[in-house]
Length: 262
Image 1 (tube, rainbow, N blue to C red):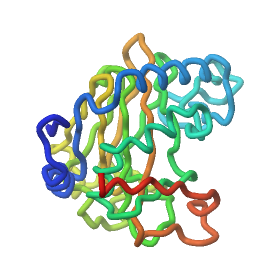
Image 2 (cartoon, helix red, strand yellow):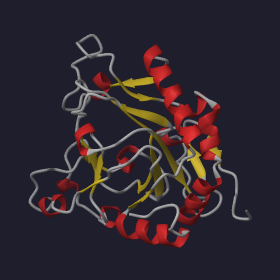
Image 3 (cartoon, rainbow, N blue to C red):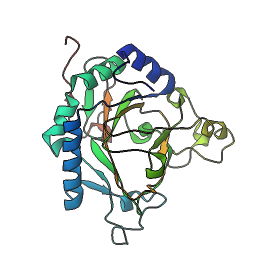
């Protein structure tokens, strides 16, 4: 995998274009990661809204309702940008912005309507997420968006790290290969070869995963005894505006600073 200390922006772009994702090791300053973890644990303990609970998604493993055992298990802290200035500092971090400008052009926009969250995956009541693209319910001019997934702690198969299908961002699949919720149909014969190519994206604290919003990805439940935390944002370039009147346009967007001259 690509590392920040050895890779050029061109290397990252080449890997991203080929596979639909790239990993940059030890990318975030340790003091920011520690502050993000502190804020996350504080807001999870206080159940500080807005929150998505595991019971809300009704995926395999989810509690039946918020009133059921485990029903108040947090799945994600929404609107991360408003929770602490450290998240704003993160989105202005020149190495991050440089990567995004290389992939998307200038200026780079960060939608507030999608992601903008801290994903949490707890033991016992975490759920299983099927194979999907993040663009399935988004409304932009094109599907050319980039997600950033920052690991605040260890991410391994046993605690439900992301797994991806390399190159799937360039695949056009017929609707018959998806179920009614636009997850990949695991029994469709044309999908079976895709599952032979699956890669688990293992991350250490401070590692950053960049992945295309059209890359198929999934995750199992957390089978460890420790909660997993990940900071997730989405970005698009200047030629890919949200469609007016859609869910994707309901909040203003953040324009990232131009660092091309630095």
